[in-house]
Image (cartoon, rainbow, N blue to C red; front, top):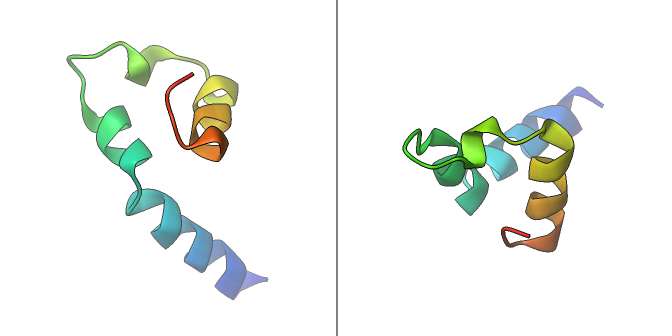
Length: 46
């Protein structure tokens, strides 16, 4: 279970979503975590 968590963290932090969240000049950072999660699963900003 611990390896799955670590693997998932690496996957998310190396994906496009990390750059989008880190861009504090956009409003993506301020959206709810549920919205950000759905964007991640859809592989695009919805």
